[in-house]
Image: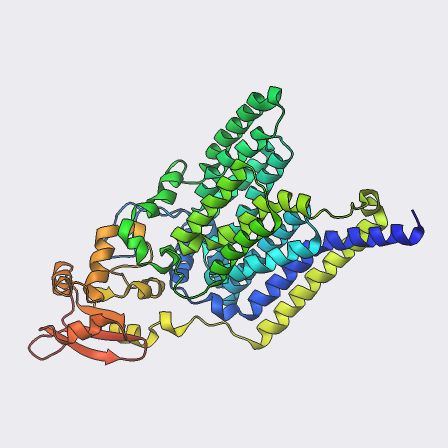
Length: 495
């Protein structure tokens, strides 16, 4: 081997070591600079509020104390650790804190993703897959707990697939990842569900005499993962809390992130599906039955609920990594060259420089930019007026619930749909969206509502305009307020 060729391989090894960090840094800076777009879901308000409550009380909630329609109802927070992290960051840096935390979560996701892919396929293809995955996921990148759990999901599935590719069982040292995931977000149930089909991939390609032994090792790992998922302050109740959202039936078709994918107009997800099909036909991609099942399952999940598109985007490439690596082989790297101390020194120095540059960019950007939440979710002036009127029971729009919680105003409904149940929230939507307008006066009387706070361009305010005993007193581009009338036409506060 010539000296120049050896040096070239050593340089490539160092570049590969820095590649995930470079991709992560680029991802972080991108989401930092578009940080205001991460602040457009009112659920962020109540997520932070619950995190603040946990920090203030040193305890976790077991019942609801934010609504007047479900006070004392059993409810647990399956994202308590993420909520604490968001609350802590918000307390120290205002909205810049959650933005930085969200950008960091996406950076870690991209870095782990490229690191796992690059073990099987060439670096340019790994980066391309990362860019496509980020593009498909961008609609759901918000300052909310699922983003902090995303790098854990990618690491968990990637490590399981790596074990299956080696025809071995996963290491028990990986179980803390499941415990961390279960404390960050309820989506950990996906990680549990994928253990079975991934184990079949390992068993199918193992030697015949080793298959039963290997299968039992995967079974024991699955049991260990189930136990690890219960290593939260709520214990086994975490499993129940994480699956409650799936029992909401028809309601899931009305909440945007739980809606099925819509192909009425061309989307990135549609393009990804067509590209996946084209790749299979063009290159004659042959997959094992377990890998086919995994891809079909992830595709079905994304078609059923748009919030699962990011799982499709990041996990399907991990399932395809080994077959693609075999289809597009790359020159072997000189592992010995990468392990020499000068190479490690250069890699460490490069990593420190990338981190320093990212932190400096963050400080400079925060010095002249103030992150603000989208006004469409924050009816500030309307809530100020309601507080002056001292009304006690406000019939609020679904998307305003988080902001009201942040203002310590008891809500009629908010983003915790699993707390209220399918019928309650469906009745609310039918009453305010004009599908069953006769429900509206019944709900207002049943819950002794003093005032309503609804979206300005929704049918609800127009229905109330025609409803006897109610008067519109405030309108802006965001919200409309109606109050009960007495003989003088003033609001009637609760007794």
